[in-house]
Image (tube, rainbow, N blue to C red; front, side):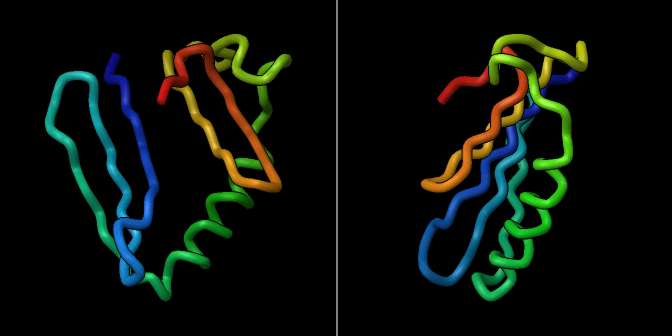
Length: 86
């Protein structure tokens, strides 16, 4: 099964980059204009907050897909999967 890491970060004040790394493969990068980032982050937040979470957070791979998801901010933290690192 292919393992993916998706990282969203601001590289500068003008763009937002999304990194998708497969366990065996090259990194893919998508860059969007900074003006779009708030809408994209808001959409991601809306999706992720509806997904069931392991209890305690990050304790197990509840979907059995060897996939971990984490979203951290000052006001909200969400993790799912036992293989979160970084």
